[in-house]
Amino acid sequence: MGLARQAIGVVAVALWLGACGAGDAPEARLRARVDALQAAVEAREGSAIDGFLAADFIGPQAMDREGAVRMARGAFLRYRSVGVAVVGPVSMELQGDDHARVRFDAALTGGSGGALPDSARVWSVDTGWRADDGEWRMTSAEWEPRL
Image 1 (cartoon, helix red, strand yellow):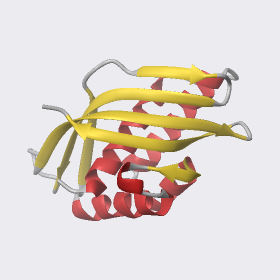
Image 2 (cartoon, helix red, strand yellow):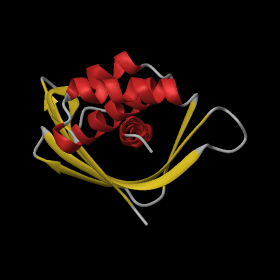
Image 3 (cartoon, helix red, strand yellow):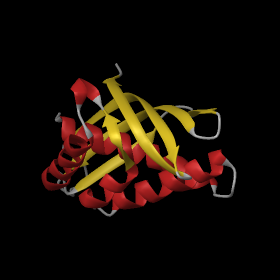
Image 4 (cartoon, helix red, strand yellow):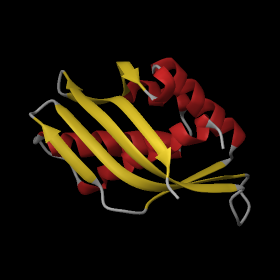
């Protein structure tokens, strides 16, 4: 299972959180931003994902923003369909009005479009977010396989 598929899953699951609505409160704005990122992933728009990541984004093994976007594009090329399902509770911790931490477990699948996925795995995901000029951007993402 490649890092590209994992990164896509991290972003897609983080996006799932946006389903709760929007408003002026920091949490509502974060949820709306995550929703927009999910739409970009579902549309397989690798270049759009770049706009959701902070300039100083850091991922596993010192992956930077550019590396995360390349990984997402690679997953989109490898898998015609990418599926994400949250399999546990989502923990969203706001730290003031401009920092947040979002944690969840996710089942990720990738396939060629057939009835069954080519691969599937459950991951534990931990993401960091920062509001820059009122717009939330993902600053970090870590994930590890769950048994």
